[in-house]
Amino acid sequence: MQHLNSNSLIQNNKVKINSSDNQELINLQFDAHKYPQNYAIINNNQPEFSQAAQKRLQVMRSGNNLQAYLNQSNDQQDTLYNNLDQLGRAQAVTSFVRYRDIVKHSGKVMKRPPFPSSTRISGEYLDGQYNAQQQQWYGHQSNNKMVQLSSYRGYLYNKSHLLAWSLGGTMKTNNVVLGTRAQNVGTNNQNNPGGMAYSETRVRNFLKTHQQEVIFYQAIPVYADNELVPRGVHVLAQSVHDPQALQINVWTFNTQAGVKINYHTGQATTN
Image 1 (cartoon, rainbow, N blue to C red):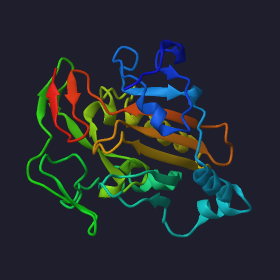
Image 2: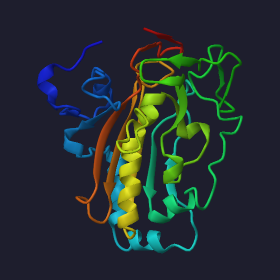
Image 3: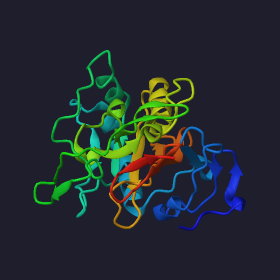
């Protein structure tokens, strides 16, 4: 696999790259010293949306659509979940997130439910079999094991949300990937959130102080060839009314320092 040369690096965890081609992000080599929280800030956090995503954003910005969405009488969140692909892998999730969406899924309002037994994901099982007609995985031999590492002891993998529960996301298979603990939350430092939690925390904190804004949020799992486990998740976000108020362009590495992952099968061994 080719890697970016050192000239692509700006400083620490900041990277300049053509992120409109998500496959380019796979070539970014993970380095625990440069990316201690398992994410890289891409192009100074300037989001580069696909044409399809830009069209959805333009529609929300046109006419009275934004205000109507903020004021609608029901709590229906405008989120696009895609079907699993032919290999049974979760695809991009795109949502317009409001303050009310984070409130309704906050711990004060609703306890987060457990994942249903039907939420089984690509790479989760060594003996996994995918039924395309049912959009359902079956398996018995889990790839998720307890690991003892220098900075972490616990299960290697999480069922990692694309659109976080705290941002209004579901607990269903098409909103979840097999992510390492570090991909999900970094080092689990509440004062310095890592992994997917970095972007999720920025969105929540912004909406708490900008309750009349809406965040256009997209999480794209990126796979190499026919691998079942994503190499990472590309997170893009932008405030709708004032596009400069909040911008996110982040690559979250699906890695765990001290662990070697077979992305074809989900099996992993400690170094």
